[in-house]
Image 1 (cartoon, rainbow, N blue to C red):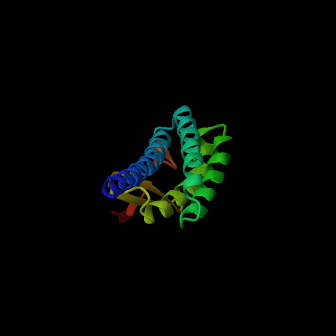
Image 2 (image 1 turned 90 degrees about the vertical axis):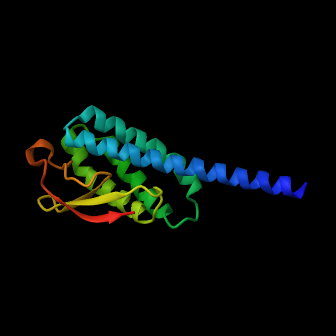
Image 3 (image 1 turned 180 degrees about the horizontal axis):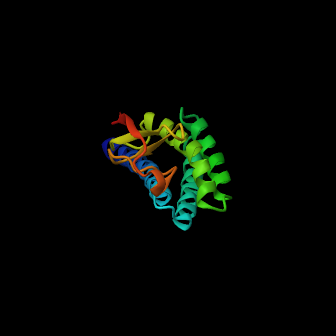
Length: 156
């Protein structure tokens, strides 16, 4: 009977960890959608991605209590709240720097699992962003300076 109980408890723990991992992966996915929307100068898609990220962060905050990444998650929530009030793609781009900063900190803390991510730096904006592709598509300037930047770090 103890064995069955231990197996059941292990399964519950594994299921909870997988659910949390799925929440983090969804946050990353929504961030990458935001990045792509900014590259394409699509304000509607960018606003929708920000709204989805806000929901994901709100789901993750209770689970983050006492964790090293809780502070950064709170920063991200605040940045997303401001970005959610933006009225244009340029306003969202202005806020993207802070959102990206938090996402890079979280990626360095390995909350997104084992996916390879790249930190890309734009020397014109003097800002970085996170990408899942080892190529430059600049979300800060879109088509105006699409390939401005370089990969500065790989996060495994």
